[in-house]
Image (cartoon, rainbow, N blue to C red; front, side):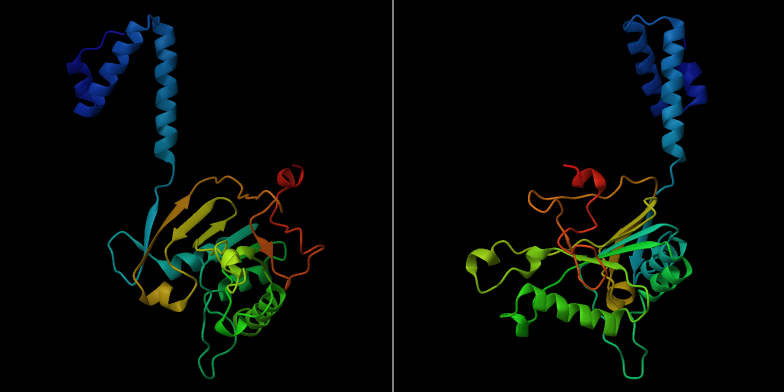
Length: 263
């Protein structure tokens, strides 16, 4: 275990040489023999190599030509087209105003719809924020959801295969009730998860302005992700599925994993 500082610095940077010198001193003080120290060092080296082999995060911008970064809309389209098994999309705003003469359908969602048509087994979950419009103050939750479902299918998603749509029921708490209004919440997360292997977390909504005109920032990550799961005390889940997709029981969202359902 004898290694002089000069020997280490011939092979490593000053910082790494100092760190290894400290580590060797600690191993010596721990009264490890040569074989034990060698095994420890090999494990540390393997761990460092594994860490260095992970893909590096990529910076993603909207409306900024930043050297070394990628474009938001390009990344979103690439992710949708690369999906094989599973897509999760979360956005606060889905707004799209169709221009006169323009075909129905959200242009940012079209690549996802095309991928769903190519892969019949591809599962797509879309999480969005529902809110009451000024003319819906007196409407109940079912009416608000029905209005959104009609608008979604008519303007945003006219294609045959529909994604599973989810929202947070707290966002539709009646505003006229002061106590209920205190419990309102919004789904503000903006991200895209692909096959639990790629994650794009961004400030950009799924709107044309956010994808191409606003200054938005995000990060693209590629590594094995933990399965997404969430639950509350009562329903077992913090989101509710919209009724525009076929479900066995709309009161039991399919978002809940089997482990959650068993609890």
